[in-house]
Amino acid sequence: MEYTCECGCYPTIIIPGIGDCKAFEVDEKGDRLRKAWPPDIDAAATKKLKNALIGPALRMMLFRRDMGFSKRAGEAIAEALDVLSSYPDGTFKHKIEVETYDGPLSELKEEDRKFIYRMLPFKPLADTIGEDHVFYFAFTPIGNTKDTVGRLRDFIKMAKKKSGHDKVNLASVSLGGTITTAYLDTYGDDGDIHRVVGLVPAFDGSVIVSDIMKGEVAWEDYETLFKELLGGKQAEKVNKIAAYIPKKVIGKFVLSIIDAFVKTAIINSSTMWGLVPAAEYPMLSEKYLSDPAHKKLKEETDRYWRVRADFPALVAKGGDRGVEFFSLCGYNKQLFKAVNSSKVSSDMVVHTASCSMGAHIAPLGETLGAGYKQQNLRCADPAHNHLSTDNMVDASCGAMPDTTWYFRDMEHEEAAVNATLLEIAYTLLKDDSLGGVFDNPVYPQFSRFVKEEKRSVPLTAAEVSPAKA
View (cartoon, rainbow, N blue to C red):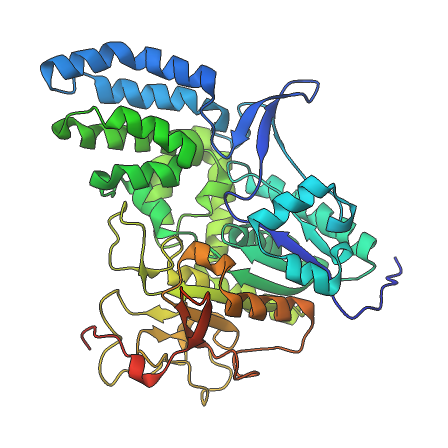
């Protein structure tokens, strides 16, 4: 094929996060029956849920003991969320169809463009390189990663043909980071990727997911927990039920709901397994996937676990193919308080070690210690200083020390309003004028996000945390 566009800007394919796509259950004709993702307990399911819980709830309230209520609640929630289910081999239990956008933004309907810009702030990039050079790859988190990356391969071929370029850039947002790593492991030899730019990417999943799967949750904050698991509208329905439950029963109820969600939405989905950090995967996969029925699924999840476990090797292999990797991370925020890992530095959703793929991060409330020296595990140039002035981050240990930026005190969702982060991302995706953290002093490797100003300012030596050395 002859590539005809000479604009100098590679097209960008956005691979979005966990809540940025829509999927539906459809019938044999393809007509939509109900929403599958984001989770939706519709009116019929809500009525069925209430009817299933009336009897157990009355017994519980009468005797002020569980009386089987929590178990029945978990079963009822699992039934209400059944549309999310897959079989043990990783295939959907129902006929699920993702709402896709099979063309550049310039060819999409206005309502679709508005949806995409509402989900992710990429309009300034599209205004710069043209909407005909920006594409949005939709997938569902409850799906099968192997199938998803196969679709992504076809999508990239389409984007190359329509844009007139031989390569594309990937803008990998949050969960999109796990899809990107799986794609490069499977189809990296195609040679069609120029740059990977991760925006708060979950390259190695999230500790939140592994904590939930282990049942290590702070159930007292069940309102936040349900909101993160089920989404705001669905959590509101479950929280209304929880409000009437005696305190000595609520813990068992919360754990039952969590167990139902894990078994319904996570265990049989290889994409959701991509959110399990590599260090936690062996234990959790042994617990949930060691039976014969899960053999096929485990073979797939094992493959992608090995990629996450040795991300530097993927970066090195990508470099041999001409792929450049970049990442934009938040740090110094506690994970959602609904889980027990309270000392892990993160952006509240993705732990910083995942975004950076291996940077050495001090536990929250601490520094790396007096006299700490950067370890230079991955530095191309040992003379480069990759130690943050607050002594909390040693970026030299990460897989991409020269191409990873860190934003202190930035929450996951605030990446969408952090003007400095977005400027860096747009520049990286627009052209090759910015190649690393030392190229432009306006964009230092370490900075602090100022919520009131919605941008980041350089981190200075005077801003050392009061944490103990």
